[in-house]
Image (tube, rainbow, N blue to C red; front, side):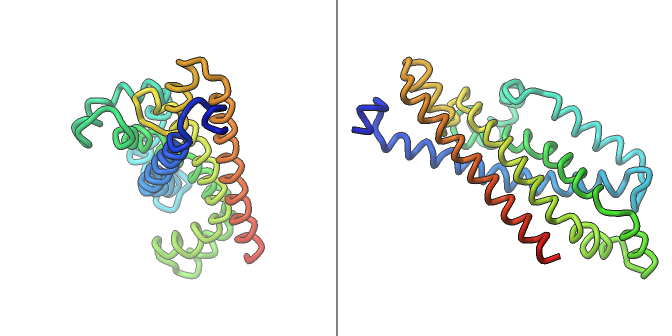
Length: 222
């Protein structure tokens, strides 16, 4: 009954949902590995940071701004040669991971930067007065105080990344977006289009709920 309503095998829908989760999780992990340190460096090297370094700050903030200014659909095409050199192909789920990481890393860098800047300067001054090293200030004061806000930042970034995975369908990246484009829009299958939208909404609600819960739990125990 479901298959006749969607006009596709149910296995295809399940496979597409799995591909979306795969692209979302892998690109988020690698994006966070790059983005979080970049956000931290931006905070440390700004004029009023712990380790002011204007040249480093200008270079990193410039690169972050450049990548963020490029729409994802254009980024997909622009770095296609690099994607092929790195993973051996320009299409498919694996190929979609490269532009997704490029997209989310600078996005997370800005979100993390904003979260870290919320830490009260008095806390950092107190840490310096106690003789804490730069590493100790980062580990035990800066990140510790901002961790609840960072969780919300990651939640926001994940939801933005989910939208990008949907656009990855334009290069045959698979996932719910590809399913909606290939089997829904191009075949005028309105039922499938509605179902894919509902699935994406459920993903967003689940991600936001989990992020809010973790952040609230952290704030409660502080």
